[in-house]
Image (cartoon, rainbow, N blue to C red; front, side, top):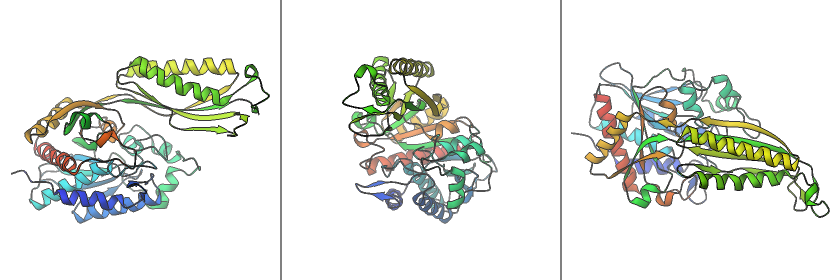
Length: 409
């Protein structure tokens, strides 16, 4: 008989973790490697140890709790992250980690020892809100980013990843990737509107969009806003505004899964009556198709060059993150769908618009994701919400799937 997830325990754990870094409106601010992140890490590690897991911390601060199996085989791993954006919600990332711990609790209560070990992990700096690139911990784990490069990444105040790992006590001794999973399964809120709009309980995630993050630094000339003719201006702010409009128009024109966002923008001297001499802004482009993503990048680059030439501006670009689209393991995706339907939960096959640790882990082993609905599609927002019944249903799908894979070949 398959054990059952303790829904009350899951909801209580989510509530308790959400109190660390709590902000007005019910959200959380636990930026990676901050004091709040350390407190959240410490709490989850205590819960791991209380469940009897062997806890290992690696050199990039990823934490893995391992439950032994009947045989000494590569484990089935689940997990996500517990860092948040500055105005995050209580479910993004946290849900997948804490649901993994509830799977362990259910197996312990039922006194079931699986053939393969089961591991629950949380990865460092998934959000990329403080340090770039995002999904840093899982990228290092999968061998896609070197430790020294990761350590050197700095936040806007010049504080490095390496220094912060030491400061909060999470510069571990284990080698990232030392535990190579048999499979990786990540449970997550959708962070989009589709499941909620269609009243579907479980998203069966087949792929993750490619991501292109670029930072532009534009240099022009400051001048008086009232006396400088438009034809003589070298307006750095104008280029930033034009890219914002061009990217939106481009995404609509390309259609499909193409999206574009100018998410950060600063102007200097930032005065109402002065033409800006400097603009720094970011552009986030995403698409499920790599060729289409490259097309979007090329068209934006051509637009930037054209406007910079007309306006006599200097432009520096910095790639903050660049990941190709990922297709998840088809057999594992099929098993997600099977276990959801066995529980009489309706399903929808879909891509993920957000990046996730699972897309990095696919480099090491078969990977898949399970989505549950986000009410009104809100995420990275203090009003982020998923109904308790959906949280519990997703955790039960995860339990059944992990048990199946851990007992199988």
